[in-house]
Length: 383
Image (tube, rainbow, N blue to C red; front, side):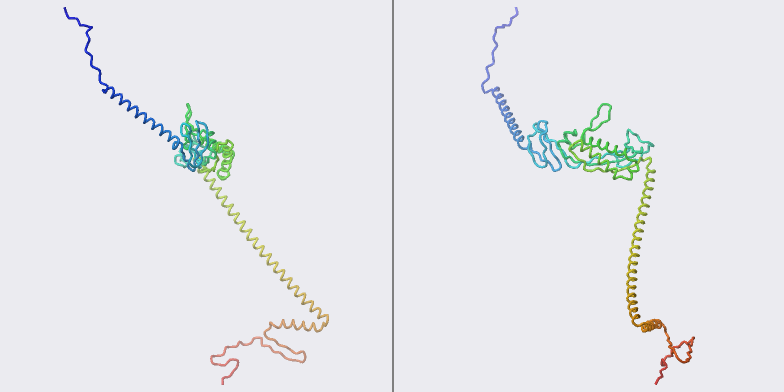
């Protein structure tokens, strides 16, 4: 018979390990690791608390920015320029709002204008309404314009809450695209562009093309008035600083005709300006001549009046002497007149009143010759 195993036979058991063996070593290593992890966690917690109450909530607002403080998502206050301290995230969130002037451009130009900043040479004989930008005037003409404006944020809270600004308002508007629709923006810049579009469309539809091309400042002022009023009525926490129309162009297909009309208008204005200048110059000269003639006439009048007064005084004095002694006065007057008459006569001959005398005049006297050199003059003889 084969030998059966004895199941009741006890196998020898290994002796227990000593207290200072491998188990104690592992436990000690685990305790050291836990102690180190605990100390590290304490340091992290303490450091986090120190950072939380010191540098974590410190913000410095630059000069041209404002910071909106949101406490647990709700508006708390607006921090202006300078250093500030608030509890950091997650208690408070900080939204930086630029308060410096921000510029936006809007162009109603053919496709390709915004890429190079000038009118493209459009080879199409028509305007594609789905691609090209354009405006319609009151006389059903097509025109292209480009605008630029600047706005300033005056109330950051209203600007952030009412304009659907992105998470960081210093960036461009967020773009969204819905099903089967082109992408569109949502934010303050998109809102302002829409308001400007309404103002430009309204004013352009009220003015003929000639007035828009020739009265550029009036066109710009009317658009600015409606645009600024729309922004103010919506109370968006911003103001429109200025608005400029940088370009007004007719369609490229009709550019030559518009240039001819503009040239004719310029020539007309030049002639009108020259005519006005000539009219002013002629009027000035006529006024100058009239002033001189009036001055000469007044001077001549005073001279004649003065002379007549002098002659009147002289005549009255002669009349008084004549009334006293008429014969003596007549003789004196006769000799006065005779003296004045004879003062211009070169040769005088006085004939007596009695007796017969003969007077012979040589009508053709001989011309006296100049004496020769060395001879005495006037009949003088040399001694």
